[in-house]
Every structure is written in structure tokens, then in C-alpha cells.
Image (cartoon, rainbow, N blue to C red; front, side):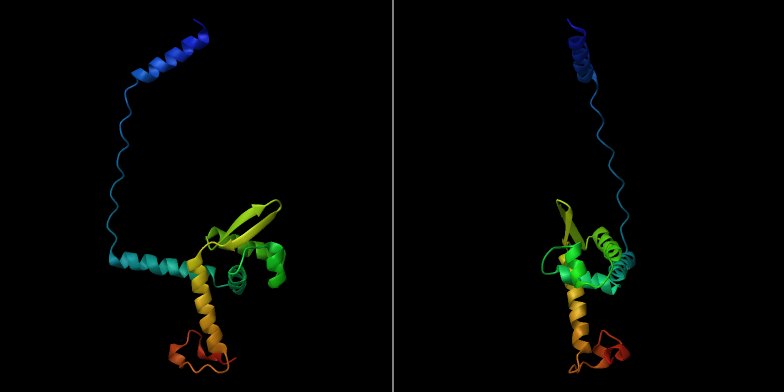
Length: 152
């Protein structure tokens, strides 16, 4: 018998003689979350999303990508900024999952990755655009924008 066959046979025999591994220990049950903790998590997550979208250029990027995917050059043709600045904002939106990307040869194409985030952005921006229009009669207490901003 060759040494190779002997090694294979020994390994096979050793594997058969090894007792089965014990099943993995179950993870401890998570402590129940109180209504207050759950509410805090909701508000913290909402604040993170609003913080991410608190930059006008990011809102412009989301708006530009709502119709179709685009590469950085196409976005730069629509949005007045520098290439490094655009890349930084795209990276932040990508890390958060708001946009996704695909590579095609040397080009990277960006598209909306979170329809919910895009819908929220669209709804807020549309409401503010209505409030800023000259013929808007929305009472001050129902506006999203502060009264001085809406009057500009």
C-alpha cells in the first residue's frame, strides 16, 4: 500500500471514529424590549435617516437617480459640484443602503437602493416645493417649512 493510500485510509478511519460534535449551544434569549426602548430605537433610526439626507446635494442625487441609474459623469452634468465631493456623498448614501451600484467595465453606475428612502425624500421635497410656491395657502401650523423660509 502506498503512503498516500495509507494517509487517506487513516484520515478516513479517524473521521469515522471521531464522535459527533455536540450541537451548538443555543444563544441566550434576548431580553424583551420595552415600548419605550422600541420607541427610542424608532426615533434614533429616523434621526439617522434624516441626518443622512440633511445635505441638499444628497437630496439632488436621490432625485437624479429616481428615474434611472447613472454614472458619476452623468450625475455631475446634472448637479453642480466637484467629482471628489460627489464621490463622498455617493459613498455615504451607498454605505447607508440608499443607493446601490454596479460596475460595467470602468464605469460604476448608481441607482436607488432603498425605494422607501427615495419615497420619503420625494414626499418631503414635493410638500416643501408646494409650500414655497406663490399660490400656496397652507396655514402656517400645517407647513413643514418655517414661515420665514416659506416666504423667501
